[in-house]
Length: 90
Image (cartoon, rainbow, N blue to C red):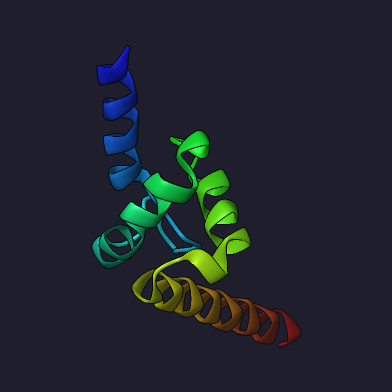
């Protein structure tokens, strides 16, 4: 049914999570990437990990705002990894 697909796509707005600390991503990430996710990655909805991988695979086609959020999320993840490695080395 068409309405079921619409509900699934609306769910993507709530679940979209490009590599954030939270499983649901931030409001800023959702707003920046929702349209790209629904346009480029509709087949991956509602699986947020698959949506993220799809957005990264299609990075060149993703909007500049979403690219910025993907880049920021990657940098934050790298910082977390570096902090964790530093703590383990102590």
